[in-house]
Amino acid sequence: MQHKHEKQKRELNERLKKELHDLDKRLLVELDQKVMMQQTTLQAAGVPGFFVTMDSKDLKLQMVILKLIHDVASL
Figure (cartoon, rainbow, N blue to C red):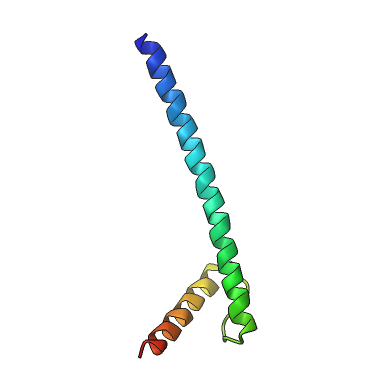
């Protein structure tokens, strides 16, 4: 009986691990889509430095630009 419960527990853990991994992948895809939409909108608005990219250096620069805009707007 205990062996059966251990097996069920392992199977449940594996299934939950896979479901969590699948959820993480879906969320990352959605987040990437949101970033691309934001980049497209800011590029269309003429904000310097904005274009669609997934390059980490470009993304970091865009985040700095957004923070600067936010800080200036908060003055």
